[in-house]
Length: 384
Image 1 (cartoon, helix red, strand yellow):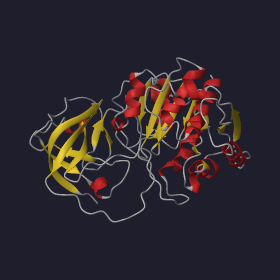
Image 2: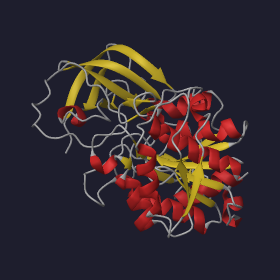
Image 3: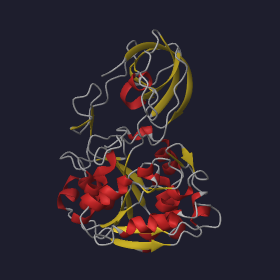
Image 4: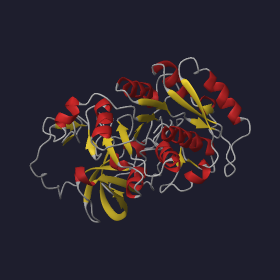
């Protein structure tokens, strides 16, 4: 359950839109953690020393902690020595609570019935100015919808789209499979600042996007008809969950999201999760996450871009392209396998305004992971 600690803020470490990271000195030490194999995490965090921890405050929810403030922390991830989420989380600044929000419309509750449930104005809410438009909307009008297992694919997909078709309006649709607050993603903040994203939509229990939606379905319709997106990228936030079992991973719903795109008249595109550096056999080549979501959950007719993994600027293991092609052939009876050349994508990836990191590895460590995502983006751009 929850490990609680009281602490005092000693310094502000960094901040980005919606988040302030502070150093906080605990009043009681963390418990000793049992030895266990760490789970799968998209972007490993970095815990602080036992007496002083890194703590994240979502400023729209709890306010902005200052040095000297007493804060109440959830330190469960630190107590278990997890990777992603390896921060303490500020639950309250009890001696300096934020003012009540101004009165306004909106009755969608996100993160429902948790202690930090938040009420927002949904784009599909009856009180929204867009309610009638979304009530009437029933089609994505052929919009390419790229669905990725990992959040780290987002900047790589965008790089592939924009290299092929500069100025394309890309919307990011955040699902609730991992981090619920949009603000946790520094990648999203950086991509928006650079103009690579036209806007964001948070769906389900997730919150903090430019638009809030009840479901991935209404979120996709909002991306198309409210944000004016030409391409949508659907992915969970940082912090994917996996158990090493066939069905126990948060990305299994990628198949459902591809189905949503197809039902709504979009062009569903499955972004392959590929790795040439992951030492776990189940993730080598095409990850079993992609094979399960595409091979067992997604309805037939999805575009599956198959990267050739050759680019002069990036060196992938020589046998990897053959392995990936062989694995992809097992999907050919169900989906459209679309070969995509990767030449030039390395240069495009290096223009990313945010760091490219997946499972703790960068572009040079595991280029195949990012080339596969960028190739999917290149294919999406070719459909416009």
